[in-house]
Image (cartoon, rainbow, N blue to C red):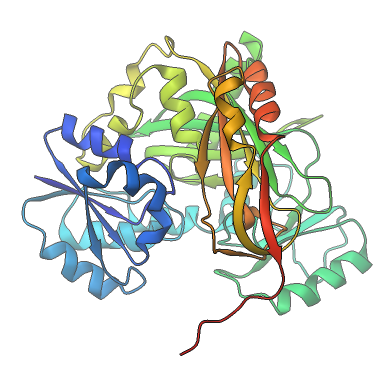
Length: 401
């Protein structure tokens, strides 16, 4: 039997291939750009069959899926393909989330409205043009990776953001909501038939304002027992109100002085190296749960004791200027540093790096281990501090036609 991925996150293909094989299945990846997975395929390509197809064309994807013999399940671990994936699973009679539920979860304004209606947020969505609530955030209702996000602390900053947003392609529509201030975390959860388990809390280190670029993370954050239990109860109610009933969720929230406030709910396993952090902290292959959910069975992770692993921290390495990536210096230092630091490249020499305000310009991630998330993050930061992307500054050079 075969499990199919409709695109995927940058990392985790090897873990997923192992999980599929554990369940007695073969893993196939449908992708419109296999270069996105160059790091994972270079290491695990012999265990993943790649089918090249325009994944923005739902009809083409359906044909490719129908051509796969013994198709048992469809996995979609990305935001962009969440709704097409749910629709395709329904068309093919495969286990999957209800498309209407996914449609709500992919709309940040709809989620905000539901949380406000259930008393789980102090505010509903705001009108980005007329609101006088400050500070506020304007963003794409279906955005990802910190793209198309503007912070405004005054009417003048709001008006400037509106002008910039008007010239920015959006995946959804422009929305606004209060800017909740405080440290940012994400709740990593698994849900089955409405039952949710909090697997751990991930710290998020952000760039200074006004940018909101993600710089580093540590997992699992050691909250006091009472606080952890309260957050576990809260996230269960949040996901229920939003309509998330199955699979992983990666919910970003700010711990304000008045309590937690959701930033966004992603109905998937966390991106970057969150999946790897889960595996190492729990001492199991967390991707087994993804395969089990795709097959329509209760994930074992709901009942896992939740110990036996190690904490991790990871840091994204960004260039200091836009240009063509040529190489990195400092990677040879990693074996000599504490925490067993590892390098996960997200760009390749020859790539043009231009989006310095969000995650698209990240060139790679350093992951390190430790007995606590705090110590692991310190080790990752020490390792990442010596890695410098070598960038040839200049304009993009287009290849001749």
